[in-house]
Length: 280
Ligand SMILES: Nc1ncnc2c1ncn2[C@@H]1O[C@H](COP(=O)(O)OP(=O)(O)OP(=O)(O)O)[C@@H](O)[C@H]1O
Ligand SMILES: [Mg+2]
Image: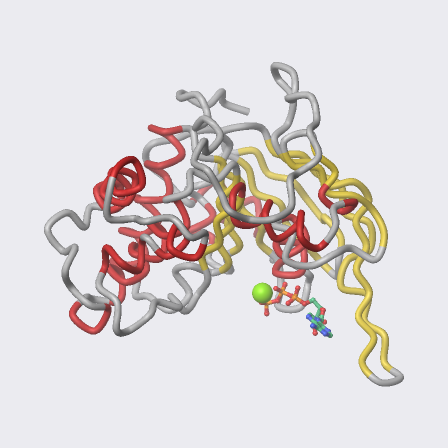
């Protein structure tokens, strides 16, 4: 694996009015993974039917690393992303984020961890149509009861907008932006709290190739220049080729792990030929 070039972002230091305090844990030591999945299983019961969405997944992600998840539809990628981000709980196994076992948190603690330490981006941008770019990006602060129009929060909102190259578009509403620009607003909103982990589920699934590439460039830059740790779910080998490492899933298990290393050209040919060897 290629070493990331930038240190990870410091933990958000802004006050939060959320009620539950997270239990304090010693900070992870040097070289420690930022994210660990230990033997994760997830079983869904719908009526009499039981689906084994995950059947024992273990992996680690280093600080500042860009990891992609690929695999056929139904192989458990989104389920895993939700467990890693604390949106759902495993049936068995553990998720450790920044040295803290998030599977053991109370609901209030898990909500707080999600808000402060993870950012999510989805295929559909989920922007609020009546809010402009600045207000959409500021939403995590507004929800936390902070005033995003002054002080450090205001600076962070502007920095996130600058990172996704939407400077000058602050007053546009979503319907006054292209699809790629709307997804970049969603990325800025996910990055504004400076999360430990950015989780993106098919963020280019609704975009054409050129627009999707702009979104991937933004993700890659936040990783390469600012040390943002990213987990990307994608069907598209050209998108996965932006990652340092690709996990291939099949039927709720890790089928293969492909190390690409940090590359600036994002050539997909090595990944595509490896996937072809696997018969994918
Ligand atoms: N909330 C749920 N209730 C019941 N079954 C579910 C639920 N979520 C997912 N599943 C099932 O778990 C399995 C894994 O689903 P998941 O969404 O993780 O797959 P995926 O790899 O993300 O697929 P895709 O590429 O189509 O998005 C599938 O069989 C799916 O039907
Ligand atoms: Mg999915």
